[in-house]
Amino acid sequence: MSSDQHPVPPEALPPGWGPVECCRDYLAYRRARPPIELIADRTTADGCHPGLGLGCYWELQFQCLLEDRTITERIGCVSTRHAAVEGLLECMSRIHGRVGDQPDPAELRGLLADISFADAIPDGSSTS
Image 1 (cartoon, rainbow, N blue to C red):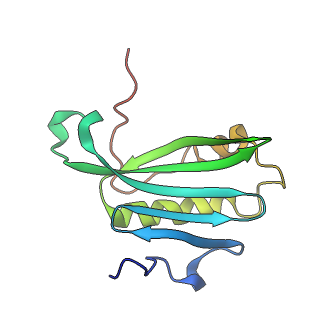
Image 2 (cartoon, rainbow, N blue to C red):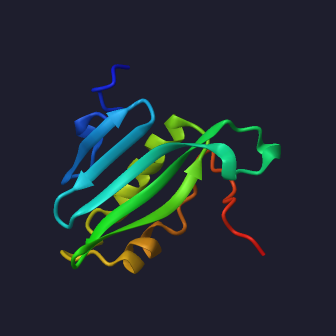
C-alpha cells in the first residue's frame, strides 16, 4: 500500500468523515462538524507488559476542540494495523449522529468506553 492511500475506502466512511493523514505508522480521520479527529498512532511497546512480546502497538485516540484548547484522550490500544483501522471505523460509527455541534470530551469518552477492540492489549498505564 502506498503511503498516500488510505486503508478505508471513502464509501466505507460514515457521512462527514474524511481522511487527514495516512502513513505507515499513523492514521487520522476527521469530522468537520462537530470537529473531532480519530487517530491511530503506532507506538513502541515500552509501556506494555514484557510478557506480551510486543515490539510496538497502535494507540487509538480522539481529539476535540473545547473552547480554545485541544483535548486528546486515549481510547484503547491494539496490536495490529488492521485492528487499528477496524477500531477507528467502530469509533466513527459510534460517534456518527450521536454528538452535538459542540463535542464534550466526557460525552465522547462515554460513547467510546465499551468498544471491544480486536487484538486489544491491556492498558499498561494503570498502577495500583
